[in-house]
Length: 281
Ligand code: BTN
Image 1 (cartoon, rainbow, N blue to C red):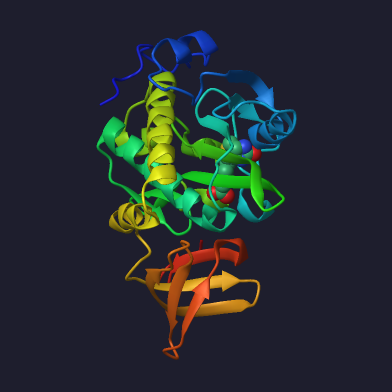
Image 2: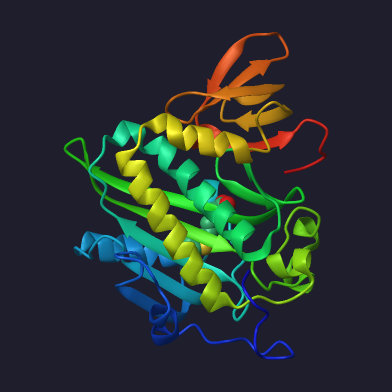
């Protein structure tokens, strides 16, 4: 478990490269590290650095973002001093077809980090939202560049609500978003959490590259909040209700619609997936 922050009240501990790298047990992830106080979006900066040839495992971290981006062009609320906003540059060898599985593997890594650091029960909402007690605590944004049928690079962005308090959230998100602090009732040390997160992500990335795809799917299934549940899926073609019955080998969701027809839902097409009984995303 990660201990409480040493500051008694809520004086935020600064995210400095020295503090982060001094206790970091990774080979690559975060060994090249760019830390910003304030930045538009760590993913945007990571994409630019990747284009310039930054090495695999380079991490871009910001204390706050002015234009944090979520899936489907959504905004990611990124106030200073409280959360983790980071992007990692990856240069995988594998077949780009398989990459649908990597966000699932990364979601497993985030969930495991949370569980190990806090003992809170982190669960996964397909495709890659991390929930605690049904509320979103973390989201992933994956962006890639493919050239000649191979990955040139891939950027994994992670937003994790660590010490966020409700008052900074708009009313519309208060019932669906949470933070580790809110669930635990105490603050967490962001530096230690980041170190553990980078270690887990690196571990998952290595397994992902070497193990058969079914391993990722097995790990994902055990943490899934979506599979076996009645869900409503909104995609570009419309809104469907049914049961989430499985995952394809590529990590797409298999939905058995109410008319018993099974359809495959790809994460790129999904606006949201929600439990059928819930009022909103
Ligand atoms: C989502 O759930 O919609 C994905 C959210 C991803 C947010 C992170 S914060 C760090 C990185 N930089 C961004 O602009 N977005 C990702």
